[in-house]
Length: 407
Length: 184
Image: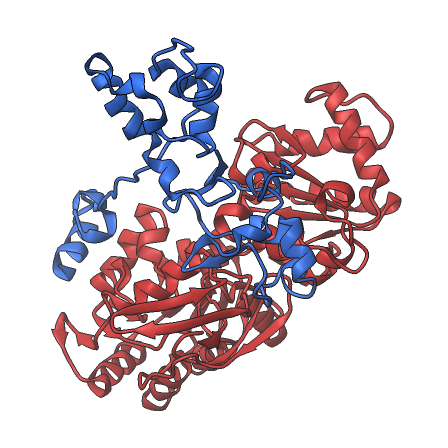
């Protein structure tokens, strides 16, 4: 058995033991089904170097990729969420050298929340603090049981911690706020159903309850009970998900108001639940390099505006390098179609819709299993990992360095 | 394949018309646990006491707990109960895989979240620096462990439900989000 770090989601579980057999993962301990699927899927449909749908050598693919980027007037470098910190650093340097637009998967996802967290506008803490001290946790528009299967068992609800020795039944209260009774909501002690888009009203109700007023929305008795639980907490944590971010959109100020209100009573923190394993890492890196978390253009100095997100960039850019992401499967059809029409360079260990539509495909090693590096967990903790079974394939960092030399 | 996908995107056709292996639906087989009442409905309901138990209902509970076998009921093997016996054998088949404590794990429903591993009080007591803190088990004495993405029962004898003086603990079943763990 070899120790490995799972790169299936942003929890970066470090206690994985696994063996490989011919054509798949042999035995794997402590790996959830999502992680097991993530590692097992590597053994079918691996990418091979391709140029214009023809098999090519790695050198040919890299030189063709460099040619496409060099000839483009406004290249786009997109993805990054499933690449290591080192590869992302090279990626930012490449964007700077090309004067390109660089964007990551959060521009269509949780960037407003990540912006608030990284700029310190709302308080945050680590997941280890949650395990050791937290007694009230709110899963708001998120369903970590499905998206991050080991979230509740490793950190947020079931484990015993320094100040939470008696277990979840006695010492922790969990609250789910969602449009449907998700798998997480089924496990929580309190569940509040909100109408789609009704999160802003719900926040106003919570604020009125905390002020001692009668809430306008929701079951009054239940809301007053919620107010009591929130007031009694010693250390509270909110895990907002895409549900909350999509519902609030430009009203994120309300979340700040709620956090300020809660923190005037008891300490409350926020930990975003980002999807890919190094989503937060890219936002943090770009923030330290440019002051913006995404949607950055290096053409004629550093600038950022909403049009530089993937939606706008897919209109204005004329070539794209896609790395550590599968936008053609994940993004809305209009954006996917615009991307598919431009010359694409896809760097991915596995076959995806993006690699199918790409003009140049460069295979890379999978992080965690075949390649080492470092990544930032969803709560901002840096996790370094070495490859469990080193492969001869180059990783994202080496590929990008070679493209940079050729550009 | 790649040409098709790119052409589809460019022409605007529905992507999911392409029946590539990635989009093929895999049917999920789920075993459904039986109740004592369902078993009772298929028994002769004569309360003849030939099995050594006062009532057929008690015999049904005995079957469910694996304390009794279908062969203990001689009336059930008469020709007129043939269909019911066949049905009984069918619905009791999942019990064959249950452990001594009556634990049944439905592999196809489990997604390996490990809630049961961390919540199990015996796991916590036997592995205070591993399971108790949310990490993977570090002790050989744990009852539950996640292997290949699915929970496995390793030491049923350590379970609180084992033996005659059992405690009806349900820490692993209430924490399961997909109801993949059941006790018979």
